[in-house]
Length: 122
Image (cartoon, rainbow, N blue to C red):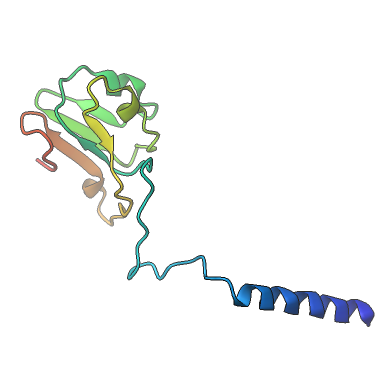
């Protein structure tokens, strides 16, 4: 009997303790968090010189560079940031974009035109 009352008092104390603390969760679709500066979101391409360093350091093989196109397959990408870290001229940046869900797999294949720097979806 005393064990049950003790458990009840402990649980009531926990409830009252959290009553005056701000909630940790956000109302997601209406309020969105601002990711920290070192967040590794969707990769974005700048002035690529086709040195192929990013393709060599990508552990999942998600990056493919052809004649005039730079392809990043987000189905394979593990967002490790190696491509941005090892790029000698810092043309690849990890953006703060984190809402990448899609019902169509073709939306997850980023194609950049190397001749038109910084433009997406050729």
